[in-house]
Length: 102
Image: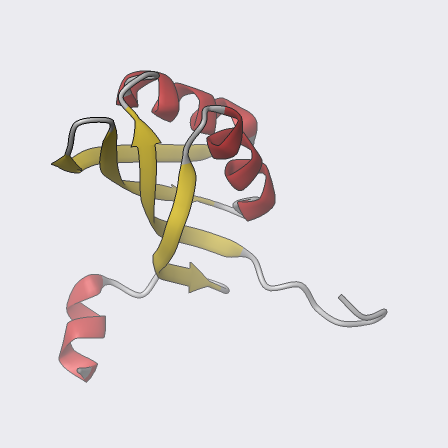
């Protein structure tokens, strides 16, 4: 970030995460929730194979620290495959509003 440049705050992230079976998604959610202040985390298993699980991770809050979340996920042996949705700025735009535009 350049001097004098305003930093955009992240208030919603939807991540595609690939993780081993252990730790389970409860531990993953707990650790992500504790890595930064004032966030809520939802997770759902999208796919399971022999050694891994694909998880959709939804993180909502004010001023989400993506780097801390990434570090926490990687410490658990998982990785972020993609950022599927992100919301930045003053307020969240609802999915209904977003769908209307498309």
